[in-house]
Amino acid sequence: MPIDTAIGPRSVARLSSQAFRALVFDLMDEHVVSGPVSVAVGDLASWRIVHTGQDAAEVLAAIAGVDWDATDVRVHFKSLDEHNHHLHHVTMGHECPCALYALREEHEVTPPEEYGPEEEPGSRVFRTYLRFTGGWYAPRAEQLNHKSLLREVLERHFGPEPRAYTTERFDLPGS
Image 1 (spheres, rainbow, N blue to C red):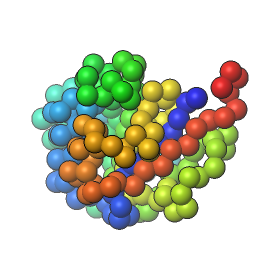
Image 2 (cartoon, one colour):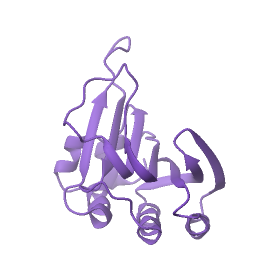
Image 3 (cartoon, one colour):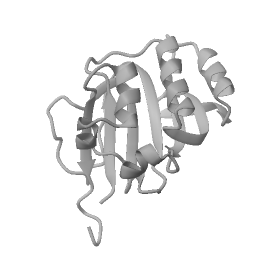
């Protein structure tokens, strides 16, 4: 079944620009994600891409050039790095698109109506989060309960025991 997972810090806080850039750097440097990578600004209803590329220094410079207090930021990665053997238990060698968000205001991440019920009340309210949407090979929240490269990187930036929720699409033919 296609799944939708969001992972963020325990607190509903937005990372600072510097902390957000450090997370993006670690995700790219440790091959947790693969490119191309696009940096977009705006809000959840309307994004404007300000940079697309694979060079980490250029991606970080694009984020540094954002007026952090005036806009939301989204960094979209082509996928979890399906060639990283530390992530094979999640990706099974397949692409898993993901995006990292830093929002000025709290936002309840809601899956489309055809998704199943919320797993934990209040678990969907975020300002900074990494989201895997609609993929067949995306990590589920319970996969973060054990030590993994993904959890290690996220805990370094989100703190211990990041908050996560997963919903699964139940209405697809053959699911």
